[in-house]
Length: 141
Length: 165
Image (cartoon, rainbow over the protein chains, first blue to last red):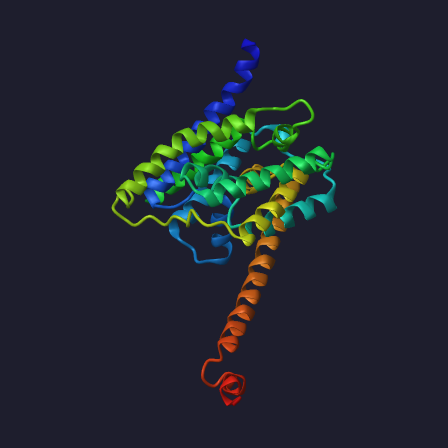
């Protein structure tokens, strides 16, 4: 049991950090830390400086982790099923654009903001994703 | 303000890395309710919400940021078909891959070629959808205009009911 708890500790600590980051973005910049919206507005505009800086920080975290040897090897997908990867990427892009948010914007910030829209969106994408995995279609390898 | 946003991005990515959520296998293990269910994604979201919820409550009460600038928060209600169909499409892609935008960007920046390609496909999906939405909104707007029979739009249909004795 204690081994189990120890395995869960990084998840809780990581979650607290993610919550802290969202609080900083809100109280500092007045904005939702929603990654899909931040990414798309940086690509297509209108570009708001805090959102661009958030994106730079997010990308830097991955690069810094890789440079310091702390990037988890399991996160690097090698030899993926390319057509499936492209299809999944297109669907994630289309869905987050149409539904105006992803796991961070709806699942974290929206629920934390007491948003009924975000709560329903989160229930929807979790249920659909769980069905996909339940059918055995989950995984890019 | 920009320094805070940069710091927020760094901490956000650090949290994703520490929690194991940049690994699609861990995400899929959470979504696999029929197999050996992995509760970690729920713990990550739960503990993040525990920290973020009081911040949102306080920010809404203040009505502004710490620096006194306005909040830009999306509407909380009502849901609409576009929100739910978008969420369903996103769920399809998320279930197929175990990747959502945050972890995908961190993974691409961490040097995964495959995830970088995923991010490109995601950007294409966003752009195509945005173009489609703009197109449909324009069509709807022109339909609404002609339907109402604004002056100069369609005078004959407007006049018809009145001309019948």
